[in-house]
Image 1: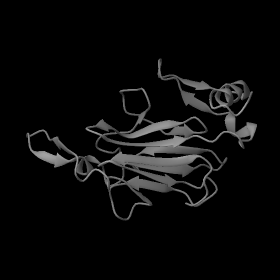
Image 2 (image 1 turned 30 degrees about the vertical axis):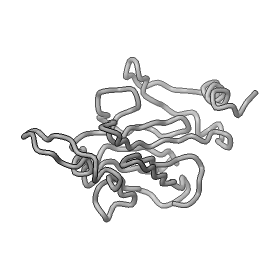
Image 3 (image 1 turned 60 degrees about the horizontal axis):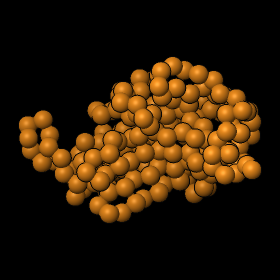
Image 4 (image 1 turned 120 degrees about the vertical axis):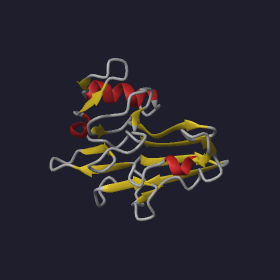
Length: 172
């Protein structure tokens, strides 16, 4: 997972930030979770961040992360999609940035994606982002996404790509 094409998992906690790049041309599926056997292990920075569980006990935030929090698959058509868990949903769910409701079906990944793998809690935060849009082929940008306000599936086009590029400063 060495190629930095903008798709990455970010983890912040205990005063440290980790960046784990994901090669979009690499091997899939990519499993993300607390399990040491996961392709990308998260929760490593949350061992000193404590929250109260349902019984009022202090537990590290890392224990709130599922063994398999999310899985990224490459479909036959080349599209990348993130699934909550791996067959079964994770205990806390994953969310599109800005939505309170956990996703219920696979979400397409493309430049501009921001998926919360864990909510922000006491200085701990973990998310997946795809930031690089400068070398993206237009075909890859004709995909669907979920509108954050209405939670409806929509289709975006080349015009969406141009807006994103302008926002990121890669187009004048």
